[in-house]
Image (cartoon, rainbow, N blue to C red):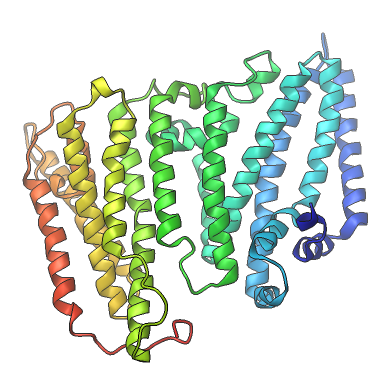
Length: 477
């Protein structure tokens, strides 16, 4: 409580948004407007009362105010301080990074919290008159509040990571609403995290539906794990902006959390996926492919973090002529740990009697070759003091997308059914072939991916002894 009420960052943003007087009058005006609209529409209603519908609408307002408005003010407050250079002065204050992040989560959002309390009071009155179960009303609000806290932490982390990350995340959420059923069917981990939509959604509670479900429990546990990882990442970037936000340890924790949540989402898809617009009962192959591909992309985070830190450590030691500090985590070890997770997810996502060891072995080869190839390529570029983002984007286009396009062109130009050939080179095509209705069981694509990993490692170790001269940035020194 002391970190909230005696938090200088929270108080600063509270005053920036008008202070107590502005918050009080805006909340009072909001309450007056909502109560007036509810009263007028209820009196004009023919043949019944609209209060039960208004109670459900207030629950939607809670989600909109806390989710959209609250997330936007958190991101804007952080980006404003970074752009104006105020973050540098904040770092000089005797405030811990944990308290600073908490200040960004509470100070700018106080207005949203006031509006939510107003909705809670109004909904309690309308729900009581309409005989809506009050325990369901308060439970729905609690689920929304816990989910939104997790969402605020995600937006805070994104705002610290990159200049446009907050905007990209906000656009992704808005854009994904129209294709939510399809997206959740492909990425079941998201279905676990979106607790307001779990099962029959929180809105069904007010109509007498089941108040709590196992899916809510899975979601709360996943939000706690992901929230802790992103909170720690935001703390790291608050302290220093020249280090990876997550690094190898937090990055591996994020990867493990994603694969673990994906396995839960696949096994309990009917419990965690929303009832509305549900496309099917869940296709294991589609869900496994979506979870593995997204997990492989997330795996770049710890690998890139370890490769960057180790390369800068070696460069600084060469400039200083002696070892400075302990040796960072080796990217080979990070890649090895990451490569163990895809096959474990496949086995955990289905009952033991359904295991296909051949499928598991193929997934292990695909994941291992990808992580090791990425590790060595990133180390080559970081060793030369170059940024690898553009190169890696081109690399993914060449090795992931072009083979798929080549096979699609072959299929369109052929009169008959063609077997996959070029697409097996791509990790996406190789994973699709694993769960294809008519798998080719060809090993040529896997052999090619192994050769890529070996080639990348040979290129790295051949240049390891050359030690090219590179400038040492002041931050690295």
